[in-house]
Image: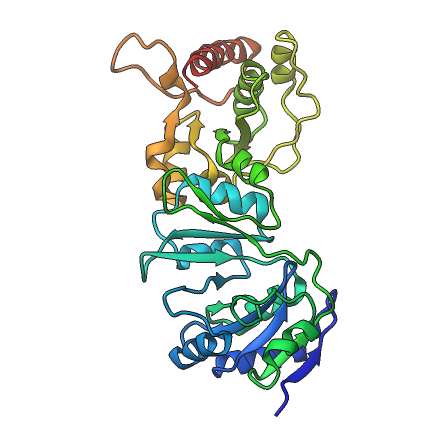
Length: 352
């Protein structure tokens, strides 16, 4: 019996067709589907019979595991453990997209994970609502398929369904990076160049956080960007834990930075996201309350989290390490906290 072919609109996947394919997967069937790289062959990771059949259909050695496919970046935490900032840097930059990463696993030593960019793939993975694995839809050792005809050339009659979503965008397998080892290792050259991957891996991310992202974090980030302006191995972020999105910096902030030949008049306030916290190597906050709120959201950030004032020359162990909010305060208060921030940034520039 031939494999059933289901045509699905690659730009606007039909929900009824996606639901039908998802049910086949939940029930233990095998479904070929397009990604932006090549066609994948999906199976329910929780169904041992389906996984064993996937090995048999592909004629693949059981010692070579399959990668899990997910439809949301946050799902990585359901499979990986002890995830380092470099993991989040790479997925923030390249997901959804042609990158498979290997991380320490909850259920085995390591697990490969990918979030494809193709709309059909994302809709299907999201609809299945169980973990799926999806190697390329071809016999092991054969050329990875770019069209449904390529899939059927190898697998016709061996799988339940092949989704026809047209020719894949890239036609090249995903790049694979092993992040379970130090330093990270590129295991397969694919759609993303080694240079692009290494640039993200080697870049240190520093984030400055205050409440509204309209004064203190803006000052700190702007000053630090000037200190490291000739370096391309450091990314500088700033955000607020309760920012009004798009708010402009305060007039005093703009004026004080203008005296340093820094123009922040175009700055727009940004709300702090968990991804920002997780991808940052150094997290610098202005007050103890910021520290507490961040740790409540992302407990694993503890060893990367500092009060900015810790980088100033302290006179004694009992000194107040908070840099207080100058909003609604007089200009002299702004000048005092600006001087404190400037001192801390100067020292940071010497250390990083």
